[in-house]
Length: 358
Ligand SMILES: [Zn+2]
Image 1 (cartoon, protein in one colour):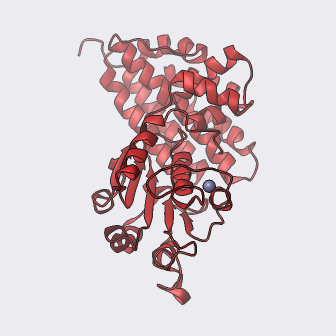
Image 2 (cartoon, protein in one colour):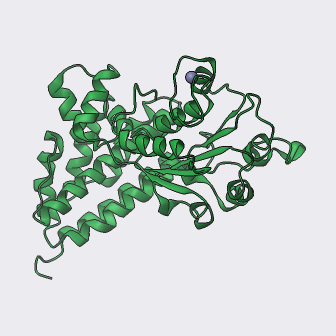
Image 3 (cartoon, protein in one colour):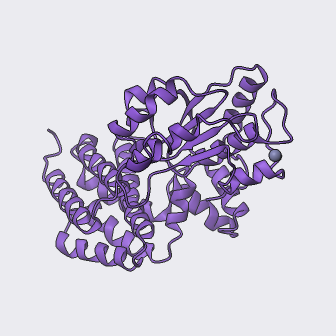
């Protein structure tokens, strides 16, 4: 997803600029924050600024027009390394760090970053999907993170520090990214030309909860009907979970064979439920947040179902978050859907039958 600018992350950028001007830029970063808010854009801009031919050593500025800036954008700069979890894998394979069996320690990020920079200045690496570094992958990386060669800079991108292995976390400077504000989301939706109508943009920004990736997933025209059925089912009490599983599977299948599109649909549904549960929890605790019409309609019903207390929503919320992780880790979607629909149905039935004064 190409972002037009650094909307929402000016504070982070200013801090990085200050570090560069004072000559104390860290060599390993861990960028953390919700998915789809612009961490990769900032990381790419940082890589551009560090390799830009029109920038001096004590400023952090990417001209975005020189060959180096354009090569980083296109992921073809010889001193820029980008590693990410392949779509069909559950983890980042170690081959991407230390080469395959035939080329052990002669290929991969750890090898490439140790080579002399072509441009003469430095190497910059971005490790996407750091949430999916397993122990083996992390072990390969430890030495490189501990003593990055020359003036190289490594940027890991994940969703939260807690999802990183302690050995990785302790070797990085953590940079936290906040979700986008509704105003910033509206601005980006318009700049990207995804939505031109002001009212629709505001409505979508509220639902997207600070994530442009979520906004994009919600723009799926076919989503609306499935979301309605889903929210009705889990604002409770739920009816026929087998029928719902069937409907959800059909909705996911209609995205075609493309795995990322199927996962996006699955994630969009689960995030809709996460939003319903969060709003219901807050409502039960007496806190009211701005919400879109679709959510509004069902929170009232969910408050009735879960009236015995907000704690009853916790297992449902955790189950959704766990399912989202499983979606991202490439689980079989048909099996996964059947499991979470069943678990949530049971939890909702149990919640609805709790006496109010426990
Ligand atoms: Zn440049």
